[in-house]
Image (cartoon, rainbow, N blue to C red; front, side):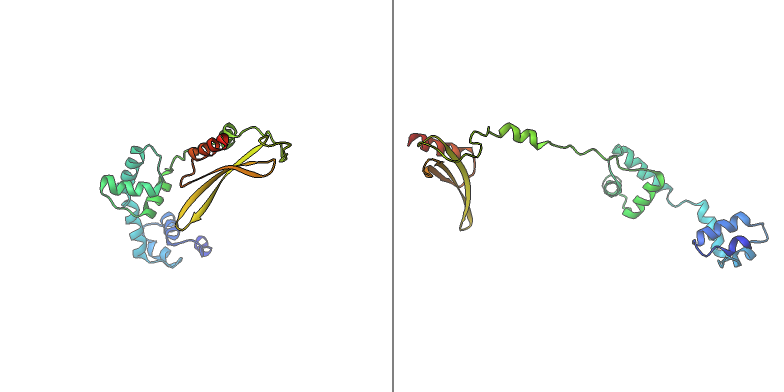
Length: 192
């Protein structure tokens, strides 16, 4: 009786377990009255305990999990169960059974790309060192590509500027921002 007095917390399953542990053949009806559960409920619990309804589902989940080498989690396994075996199973059930079996997706490490290395390959040496003045023409040129929206399309303007008098030496307009645009601009600048 003392065991059942502090059983406010916990569900019926826990109460049925205690009854099962304490029960002698003639005491089941009395023990069910103490925690406030029905005798028929207790016998249903015993019957379900013997019949595991998830045996076939567990077998299928294990099979699909090992077929894909443990790479996928419960959402993907649910789809593979349907796709490969034609068995539709609720994702919550797949998750519950995977947790019960201790199956988890093997998470692959994300590959990290170091963009600093890539950028370092393409960055030109800083020859100006923030000195944007020139003593004579054609000593220092700077270039840039700017984009403009004209109507519904984009145009790209590449320009070469002389820092001596801030004059635009050459420019080229194109619908594509590519190396060809810059090369054509420099060709015009050298020709001038």
